[in-house]
Amino acid sequence: MPRILVAEDDADIRQLVADVLEHVGYEVLVASDGPSALQVVRTRRPDLLVLDLGLPGMDGLDVARTIRRQSDLPIIMLTARAEESDTLVGLELGADDYVAKPFSTKELVARVRAVLRRVHARAPAGRVMRVGDLEIDEERMFVGRGGQRVELTASEFALLSTMAHSPGRVFTRAQLLDAIHGEAFEAYERAIDAHIKNIRRKLEPVPQQPRYLLTVFGVGYRLAEDHELQGAGTAS
Image (cartoon, rainbow, N blue to C red; front, top):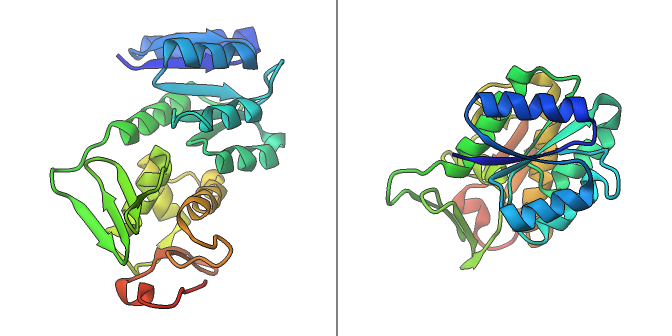
């Protein structure tokens, strides 16, 4: 049974989220402030963190930043609609997804299931894709560049893997959202930009001049093809 930590300072919201997640079969842990959330992560090792950005003691962004220095624990942020800039910062820190308040419990459960599904997804044995000096092993959720491992979150891996199936193909943001959520939500399309920025920071030798993940302005993104990765770098 997956174990989920709900870090939320509002007692009513915390209890609601805990009750809903327990009802659908998850074990739920709770924390009401940032330091407590980090302590539970260290001692109880949850499978996923539902993280409010407005925590006392240590805000959600600092909690996410601290966790990302130590682990790839999946994180879904709970945000107020007025916190859009903080949401994008959180995604760039490596959060997997976000749900804006006020939210429906059905949507929250769907996003928890989607993130856990990405974490535990495994492709058939032997499914390894290579593009230039990139290696993407779906069975092991491994990404290598020039033989060096690149650490990605589950959501980042899902995006890169989707594009690696069709190098050169242009994917719209909605199509990439389909790949990681199972359905596209228009309000969340900017999250794709944040994920792409984060992948580039980890993958690209010069993130400001990407060779691998290329922007198709006004449309979306594509993964470079083999011939584009031969010799000199390619910028978008």
